[in-house]
Image 1 (cartoon, rainbow, N blue to C red):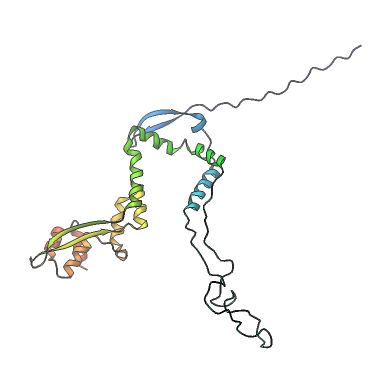
Image 2 (cartoon, helix red, strand yellow):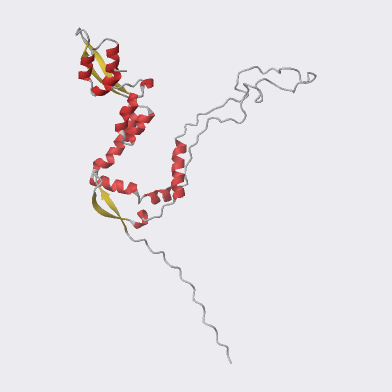
Length: 257
């Protein structure tokens, strides 16, 4: 009798990946109020965030901002003679070739940092995956909110541009001098230090005044400090200074010291 053949095993069929369901984000206006819900592409905005890619992106950005201007002097760069301090043998001392060698004080540095470029590029696939991963988060809501109210998106951009191009702020006023023979100028000066530029970018303008108060070393002064200096120099009377001061209490405290 002929033997019965076993039925052939079915090949496993590859399962199709289920497409992620459509995602929605809230559209906010400048007052942080919900205006609408917007459906977004699940292929782009539904991707899972890869935290390591975000780390690599931040690392690349910070590396590109490094100046890389550090430098140490080798034995060929330090000042000094190349003459042999003493003869090679017969003195009882250790042999030495020159006074600029790294073992001696004021000698050159061995394997010290030299100027270099720290910037580098992420792989193309990593950049694409990183852009896709962050697309569905807070940045997307900010962009969608900008379509509803254009001022919301422009504010951060304007603050960033202002913090970079600002060279200084000077506010001045002319005040009658002590003998009423003319006028003297009182001025408030703000120098855009890195700390002040950072406050502008972070929308912490209310903290700038305290930076001006403590920034005398870099040439900054408040209007009250300027008026107080004029009173101490005898160029301005105290009642006139208090009348012109934007913060009379602060000026009175300065004059009482």
